[in-house]
Image 1 (cartoon, rainbow, N blue to C red):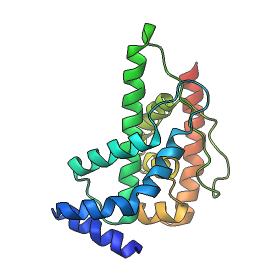
Image 2: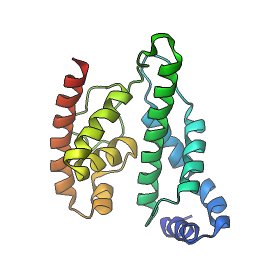
Image 3: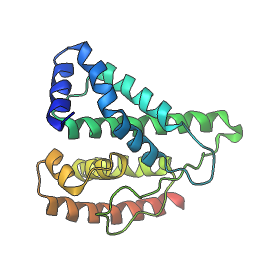
Length: 190
């Protein structure tokens, strides 16, 4: 099925057609699973949610929340953001259950796009979330670009489309944001 058909199903779903979501799920499942797999990038530590469980929970949350979604790219961006929040909540809950309430170290590997010039060293996802929230307070667009790139795996061109800017702007802002995040993550480690 084409991108246009996926977008049409998304529009039908957004307009209240519950049957459209049932047609949409099989069409987007594999890509959602890939996003979940990449966003988990577990290195050492405890294995968190399995990608299938993450996809299923994200899809249920998306169904309930009715994010305003314009097209396929926006849908995957909303799904990736939802997965990020689910993972952070899961890890925080798991940390509370452990003795002493210490952090569970789930590492985030940056292997999503060949367009990347430098990767952020694999941070703890809770620290990454905290750093992104801090960046969001000062520059929401840059924080959103990081989310779209790292969590949704969108290319610079796709991010440019979602953010209504040029791909060159995305490249410059991501370069700045990566450096800012690296500094913030180093600060959080201290």
